[in-house]
Length: 174
Image 1: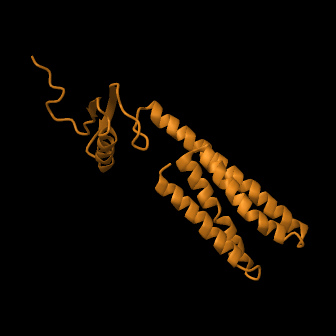
Image 2: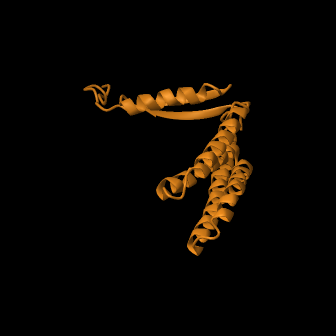
């Protein structure tokens, strides 16, 4: 994960913590909304940095959320259980996003697609691209050219689909 992304995640955690602790319990919907915002940095950390980053961020969020739980322990039992369940969900979201981030990175590496501008293509890859005259097909061709731009060696075979047959298309030679 880049330093810029780490700073963004840390800034989000600090900002959301400030919002959450500055809101009073008199405005419960806003207070709960701020609590739910903690999922954003946990999921982003997992997607961008993998399981380790996702879990680390979610554990930090849990530790920052813990004083709030201790402060509200004198309230109803359901509030305490809800807050504890929220910590479990923070960690689960960070872990699941991290697992997905790791799998995505491994998949990109297995396809020899440069991942985060660190992988280098060394062997030849062969690609088959189906095209026709539709805008979607032209967009796919443009996307494929951007994708293959980073590869050092690639063979692309274009398969064009004809929609109309000319009069002499099946004409036999006699």
